[in-house]
Amino acid sequence: MKSLKSISVFVFCLFLGLSNAKAQDTTPTTDTAPTTDVATTTEVTADTDSHGAVLTADQVALLKAQKDLIAANREAFKASLTEAQLAILESTDLSKKDIFAALAATFTAEQRAIITANKESVRALRDEFRSTLTSEQRQQLGSLNNAKTRDVEAIVELKGRAHKRN
Image (cartoon, rainbow, N blue to C red; front, side, top):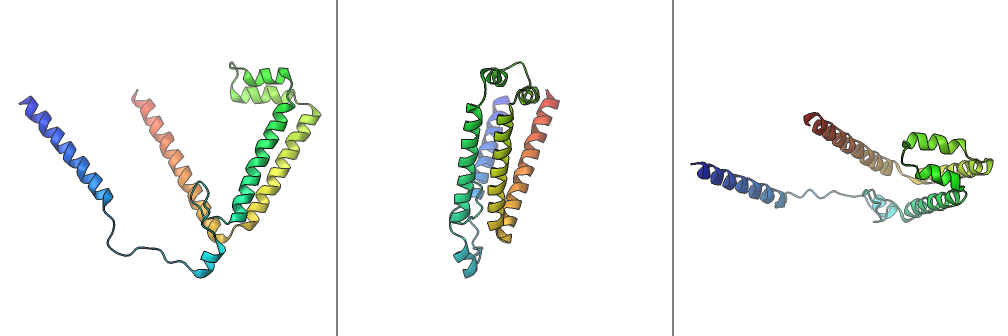
């Protein structure tokens, strides 16, 4: 009797799994293709960022320049760190907040100037990029950011539930 129950549960789960897979494979028969204006098509290229928002080639170049600048600034700053500062960074007994506080206390005037210059140059590139966005692109990026926030909140909630169960 017990084996009959387990076999029937297995068959039911198999059937349920296959029906869900089949349901996901089907495509709607109605024509739901979005219509696009010619002005929008000529204004925006097919280049997309990692999140799927449509950006022009110039905007993609600005983002790449910003990413390259941040990497170069980070390397230049790391090259300016002393051995004592590197030891603070590699410390495993401090929290991230404590590491930052201890490291900031040891910065030289030159290192503070590098940090300030880095922030200003990144801010200028970010403002330049934002000025090139159309209202449609702003809406797309905003909805992507909202979706990311919802995803992160859902993950945090699930992790919280897992900790409560244990």
